[in-house]
Image (tube, rainbow, N blue to C red; front, side, top):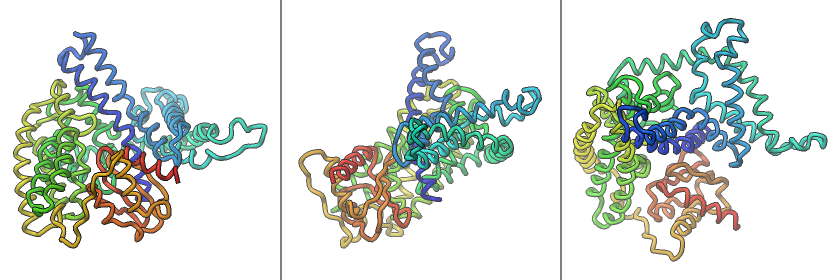
Length: 481
């Protein structure tokens, strides 16, 4: 179950990766016309509406992305089936159709059906589509129906299955919706404390990839909060909308890079050069784009107590930002790019104060991390025992990603041991026959930020934002053999 949920989290990253495009378009549009909402500038209107076309259709993106991501083969019919599933269920459970089925006026329909086009249903549609693809994509029908065999059968079976799912949700969705609303309101009614608790659990769930599920409640329109959508549409209450995003900026832009500096300063002299290259790249990624996994995985498992402190500080940051009503938003993550683009969004409230908060958090992160590392002699990067020191990999001619991929694949045990290779934004996600055959020391010698064993046969290699190129090279190696 945990492995499946992790795959779901990975699949969500495909549609989530589209959101920066919306942030850029809407951010530039509001920058040009921050008051008129595009009414005073055709160029601004063009950009804002273009960005809105993405934000407003997040559920569809989830249906397509999850359908493709969870399918055993990355085939277009799986993505198409995700769209088919979403269209069937959202049409059958729309307020007008439900009113017809119940024989009542549309105004009297349960309000839950007015919110059926949401991220939860999008994800569910993608999951059903992937199940249908994995089950029916290779089924052969009798000759008379041969045209509909295999992958052509998948959208058909998806549509049929969604009739059953729609019937179930006809009764269940109002209950689910009410529960989600209660859960979201339970946090939102706590105000700043609720934002802090959300930030804390968001970071704690990063190792499992389940933080994506938690994010759906607060960032998208599952429980009526829709913090990202409302912020970029400048809807809601100034100083409130964006409270589940704002506190991440001080941590990702300032706190984590400062933590990286602390780890560099506490590394052994002989290893400082290697640690410096890792922390510089990871710190820049966190500051500029908000991608924090390369840095977090560098100490997440070697110093779990330190990661717990990081989760606490993240919760504290969100609580402080919410307490003082400082708000900014992001389309992808809380990095410099999204921060700059969000400055002209009308509903943003004193966003520059987040920079001041960030500077304070940089100091806190640096000195607290440095104190804890040295006080408890934590084995953060560069502090490993000499006997555990990995050999340095010399430069290899040719494609650097091909060289890196070859060494990682060799360390995993090669064709004899590796059964599946996939990747998310920053990690290689692999299935192996025998974990004992994996040479972690050889893999770490390539300079990757870290390794995460998530099951008896599941292992992740944290590479960084260039992970796709490494995964592609491994795919070539497997194909050639």
